[in-house]
Amino acid sequence: MKFKPLFNNLLVERMDEENRTKGGIIIPDTAKEKPSRGRVLAAGDGAIGEDGKRQPMTVKKDDIVLFSKWGGTEIKLDGKELVIMKETDVLGLLEG
Image 1 (spheres, rainbow, N blue to C red):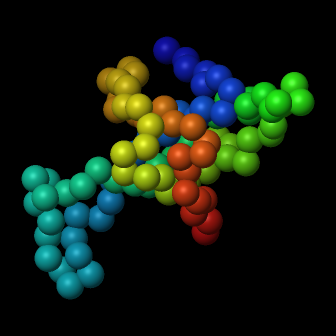
Image 2 (tube, helix red, strand yellow):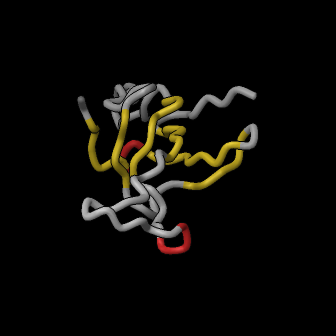
């Protein structure tokens, strides 16, 4: 099934965080927090401003983003757990 976000919404797949600390301690699944990093699977065309013009999106498909832990709406699509969020919920882009 294909999903196309509207306006300034993004479809994001969470990326698993490292399950081991830098000191080598393994973090059990019960103690893990939801990842706040993900890959953008689809992006809308941008919000429409007060002047009636479409505002271009900064975030695009395949960008790796950081977002707030509680941002967005979780959905299940084709058996995958995904998040729909507004572009303003994204805290920043990860590069490199």
